[in-house]
Length: 162
Length: 476
View 1: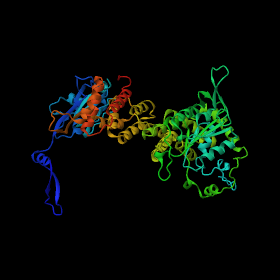
View 2: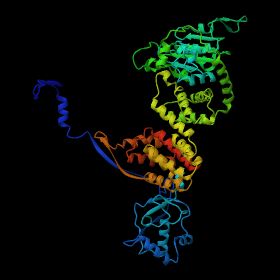
View 3: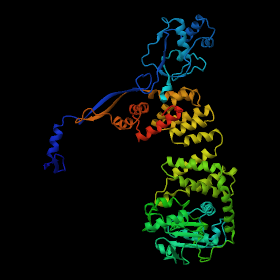
View 4: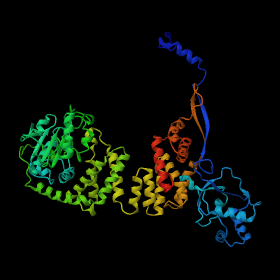
């Protein structure tokens, strides 16, 4: 219902006023909508229940503590009886196919203090063949502080095109 | 419109038709190819004069009809049954179309729709009532700008947009300039009434040249230079990306006009990449856009940009040419096939992948990266390590999506879903399992990153074709 009521504003005598609207506004009590939040999660990596199978091949990562990774790995080579990383690469069998890499979201890297030297060298060689995105067994081993301190999951990407 | 002294250099000016210098190569090309011409211009700009003068110079048996006034009987003659009363014949008069070598249909946009349909076969097939017009060589038409395409001033009552199918049959569609477009010298020649009513006569020069051009044109039709065909394919694609559609028929007509124009201008295939070739191709392209006939003048900047892209893609030599081709191609799956099958070397492959990821809208770049990344890791793409890393950097957040999304829900509803999820659900529901999982990753990534997908179904289809291309036959 609309009625004419005196306005409080100077210079205005009358304003139109809808009493129903006034009542609705007075009693609304809050916003007309609420904000909803949900978590959206999906992956095609490492699942064994989907149509796309990109299984995890390997999880690698080394915890060097406070030691210098490069110095420690050079020492490890000597411990294992190799002159350099090329010799170690030729002697140790690593995954043969290229893999997708993903930074491990649940990384618990193995401490170099607890790993036996052969396992530690295996991890170090794989890390030396990885970028954050690709494991490439055909490239030379590149050890840098960055490459040795990555924690990575390796996946076989062949199933992506199923 | 004649002032025969002094004469400017153009062939059309020699006929007394001034102000057509820029368009002359296209008009002459249409005379060489015999393809239909449509002139669009304000009243009194010399459209009819030009075409009638050309027919006089070529010594043609000419018919000039005003489409707003003629009846069909005027065109074909009075029908009567033959002696056996088994078929209909037409009583020919000097005005009927049967013996004509050239026909000018003036005011074509003002005729009745049923007449437009009859003119359609005349323009398209050189036929009328299903009967071939065996002598007819040239089909020309003229019209005022249609009422939706007039900037100011004069209104042309009854000048309707030309039917798109009819307009698409004209190989050359030219805007005829008004007074402002004339040079000072041409203004004086046009304003001078000397020579009015004199039959256009250049001493048979144009007739002889047209005959020679036609012979060469027919000879070269079967061996059209590859760069012309490539340019037409490239520019048609580029224009369509700019929402300016050229039909496949139009692409063919454009090729013919370009070929004829290079013959008229004596441009050898080796000289096509020259500055003169560049200007000529652009002029021909601008004269081959039918949209003006129905009042939808294409954006000049878009046309210029499409020409530049196509020209560079066609005329650039070596690796640069392939790079232009790659970027000119819009569809992601076609880009994928170009990369897989024709990439000249790994450095170039890396370059185009980097450029694609940087320049495409993010949803499309994401789709390409997701489709290409696993294949690049497997070493199936002709790209270097940098290219693989770029794809990986882009694709990793797509392979695993884990994000919080929020939306507003009306108080009166409960259990609503994110609006984008609701949009994508029907698209996903129709897909097979593996295809659905891939598409879901892509859509979820878009939602998590607030990326808008305009047409989800088409986007998914393009993504899937791209996956198929990179899947190397593994993907259904």
